[in-house]
Length: 154
Image 1 (cartoon, helix red, strand yellow):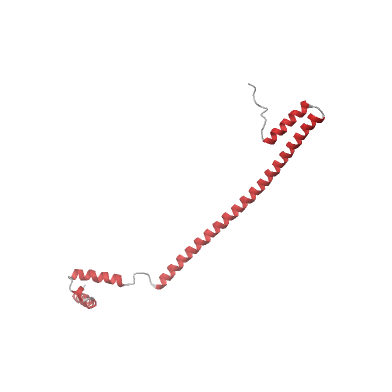
Image 2 (cartoon, helix red, strand yellow):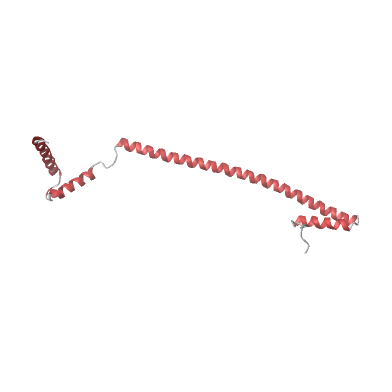
């Protein structure tokens, strides 16, 4: 750097210091130069627009709104999927319950028919050797007791 350029830079610095001194309140002008510089820098920092410009802030707000909208749509879709899965499970349980109910009605009717047949054989026909086991087996089946015919003899 040449001397003339250095002189111009110093003059510019001195002019900015003079402008800074004029802009600072009288209390700050009485401070030592190092403190004045720190205070002026801090004052400039706090006075400045410490955020993005309006267009950037608008774009950032739109991006955040888009992100929240996407999250809401994803949550809504997951809730719809969950509702559909719950509806399928409910329909499956209803069909299973209907099947089990039909099965239980058939078993109940068979047990009642077996009890009737056993009573008929025992009382009307007088065949106690055949009627008694049918009556007992039908009654036990109605109670839900399963005979264990494969039990090992002790």
